[in-house]
Image (cartoon, rainbow, N blue to C red; front, side, top):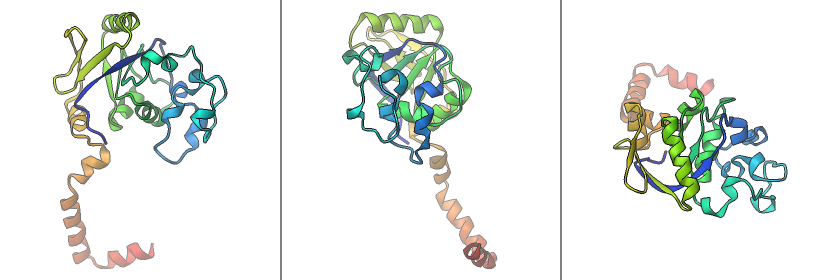
Length: 217
């Protein structure tokens, strides 16, 4: 998992409340058995005028010129600014995959659906909860200033506006540790690889018949 330390980037506004995971990545794209390739289909039903299907190249699609992510001023955005209850609906892990693979590393909103919030941390995406007044302020500034950028400092737990003013945010210490070090659940387990190998070696030495059981299972 990619480390998250300091992020500076353009902010794209998603000015809708209760954006659910089916809007983030529609159900037809869940057929893929891979964890990659979902970025082109982020917000597919809003982003394109035609109906999206797995395997259709982005070059053959009809973009919706009115959709926010299709506007040139938000090209290359790394921070997604959203409204309350972002990521509600089904628990599909494909939603944070699609957001991350599009190019976003951080989502800022007044509130998130719990499962989506947890899935973000497990996949290297930082969800930040800010008061609605602060989110309103950021929406206004994004609308007023093309190319508006924020700096997200995870170590200091601060969102830094272009003028230098900081908005603090909370994050659980363990989740912060995992993001700073790029550790997902597998990465956390592999920190103990030597102990696991030693245990397996001792186990087979004292119970050698288990090796044959495993092979014949």
